[in-house]
Image 1 (cartoon, rainbow, N blue to C red):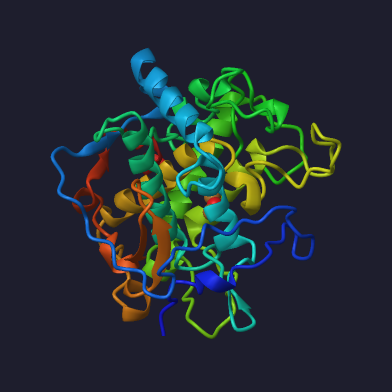
Image 2 (cartoon, rainbow, N blue to C red):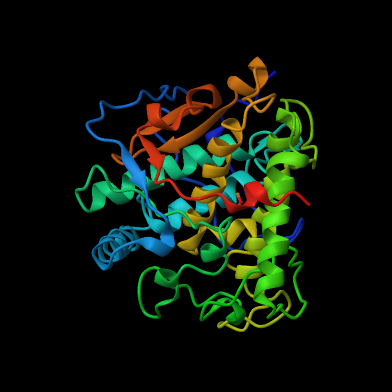
Length: 351
Ligand code: C2O
């Protein structure tokens, strides 16, 4: 049967590396009616939120986004909308805080990956919009599938702003090209042309060659009573994960407080949401889902009830707790947003 919302009362310790405990609680505030969480209904919408390309926004937009993020960081840490609580959602769902019996709930490496992150960004975006009183505010997407976007978007590289995170690998600064094959400790390539070609080819593989059928794209089935299958979808494997690892601090080096790095922030599930660029990275992952469905053939959403009826728990922009279904997030326009169009040059990069 499908994965239900976790038991919110039994949220426990998260671990960052299988057995090392995260030294704070990643659990959300327990709602009063924790046993009776209502289903979410889409609020009436006036205008579509249109997510812009991160490397193509105006200074005015950047100022708005910085302000909204700053306000989120300034909320009381116990407020479920606060930046820390928002980052903790990822920690709770991915680092073992929730269990069904002995099985750990995990939204990576399986078919919950795309829908979980879609709902997660949906509420994150609405909270930001609410904090600046702009119901059309839309997150920027890190357009890494385009040569212009294969580097950290500049707005995230401005020191002392709310979008900057000092816990990144120094190699992400100043427009360095990302290599989608990055595994953790190699020297980064400086051959821009070759790296762009390799990257475009790997996106082609992840979107087309290796993702002809739904379970290849979304990841393996994951049902209640089974352990996570560790069979991630093509985009999740690459470039999604290498971009996380490329952005986070090198494992084994010292963090600013002297502790050993586990890839913080972006390179570890428990801390990934503490880097504001996480939400732009995942906006592009989410956009890949829309593009993939548009490619035709068997590239369609999964039709199995066990997927459609899987559920997650989130707080909305008014601090109200809700349960949401996978089946209700298949159409982003119905959810109230879409993506500013961009060229998809990888479409011509068949290996
Ligand atoms: Cu939930 Cu990009 O990982």
